[in-house]
Amino acid sequence: LQKTSMETQEKLKVATTKADTAAVNEQLKANDEKMAVYRNQFMKDHPDLFLTKIFKTMPEPEVPKEIPILANGRKDSTFAYRYFKGHYFDNVDFSDSRLLRTPLFAPKIEKYIKQLTPQIPDSINQSAVLVVEKAKADSEVFKYVLWWITYTYETSKIMGMDEVFVHMVEKYYMTGQAYWMDSTQLVKIVDRARKIAPNIIGNTAPELALKDTSGKWQILSKVPAKYTILVFYDPDCGHCQKEMPKLKEVY
Image 1 (tube, rainbow, N blue to C red):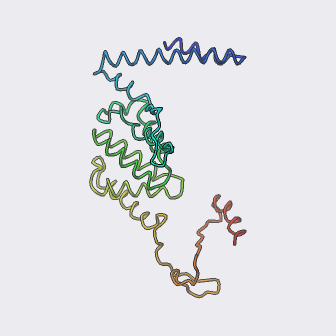
Image 2: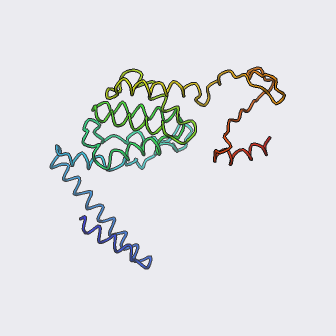
């Protein structure tokens, strides 16, 4: 089947007409159906083999074609998304650390966190905790998942995503669940989270006393304005060089 599929793919590369492409696509579809039948039969015949777990992990949820009707008489437009996300891990065995060494597990976690979850810290935190709690079925899986999420958002270049890093540290590292970390490593990551936490987007900024352009001291909370904009910049910062002219224009 694999050889046939590869041969069909080669035919697709040299197809010159719509008819050629359509014929090759039909063959690819037939090959996929044969492969699905083979995998299903293999799983029935060998339910205890690791390859069966791999086969179960590979497919994504099939969303029912019948869409529920809401109380207002309209079809539930979010049903497909909610069903797909809600059943995404149905056939993933988080208790088997061997899946960590396949090319399937890591991309599946990444897709759930980065594609199926709205990219807002609150939503990511909720999805992250769900995955980490599932991963507790095996110590190595738990270690990998928690590490990946923590590192991903500690090093994120997207503003505001450090909130996810802080949430992971507070929920799992500060509570002693990161069993693999020694005291030195733990102190460093906790200290970093504590320094970031007060500056998370949405938090009230610490009080500041600064001199204005006339040299007088001003206390931030006492400025008589509905809105106050503070701009911290570095003349050598590429982002600053790009954004400062826009801010000046608005001002």
